[in-house]
Length: 225
Image 1 (cartoon, one colour):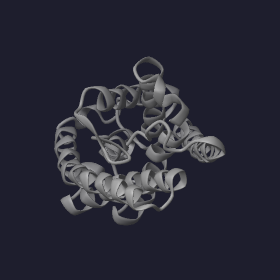
Image 2 (tube, helix red, strand yellow):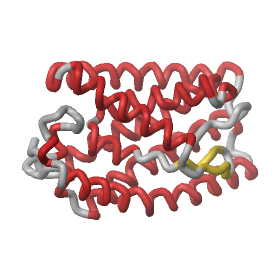
Image 3 (cartoon, helix red, strand yellow):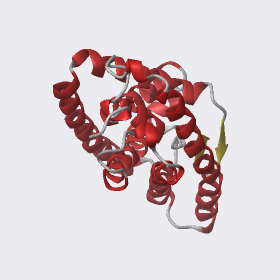
Image 4 (cartoon, helix red, strand yellow):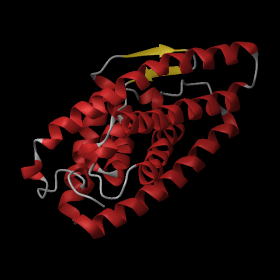
């Protein structure tokens, strides 16, 4: 989902910094709430795990350019379900930053746009989870349709934001529309894979109830709200 260099240039790129600042402010709010609820050690541990996972998603898992961006398997809903919203947000932002600093410096000018593209769909997943998952249901007991809804919300949000940046930078010409459509179509494969990954990870987490109080996981993974 990296925004390609040159897609959005000049004054238009400022929009990315503005949206990233807004998303970052909300992530800090979530972080403060998590710090208050679980303590610094748990928040730091889960954020570190999320950062390492996101870096691996970008650098190790297959990724390939399609249309206006690249298709990555970024398991945003999985991170949310296992680690919680704040650690997932910090991990997405930091993992993306580390990748840019050490492996893809040409992506740094687009960091604001890229981090917005990752974080805002995560916040949408958090809101959706509150609506479709009953308060008494631990995340390890999710059904496939719930995992699919969360995955679709995240990946659909990524596609929507990439399309927004492409329209902002290149307009509504036929070539740009075709490139956006190609990217969106390719990302549908991710939507097919991620719910299965979610359920597989949750099934593994169910066997780790003994670690429920270790601070490794979000409280909601094994407990009701």
